[in-house]
Image (cartoon, rainbow, N blue to C red; front, side, top):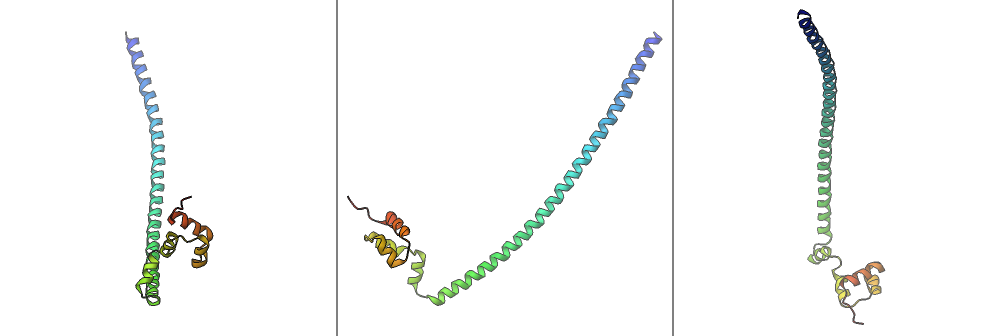
Length: 137
């Protein structure tokens, strides 16, 4: 009976030692994975900081460009007001094809539009197809 008890204690001791060794290896593996994940998180954080900084700089550049363009548009608007202060010019600029469309609806031919307005023949043909009155054949 003493030999059986001794054998059970020996087996339990072997299991305890084997389990401890397995836990040590598992702990080392988890520790390496933890360190790798921490390194990856640090790299991602550095990338995010870099992208945020770049986004801020792009935003500043876009804001600056917007201000420059707005200034150019204001100058252009002022020069148009000086060059053409009448209201008819603003109506024509609102729809530059209005006069062409009226002529097309009155039956103008593509050659007339090319000669009178300086548009291409293809453009004149397209305008006639879009806005012309269909002829009954």
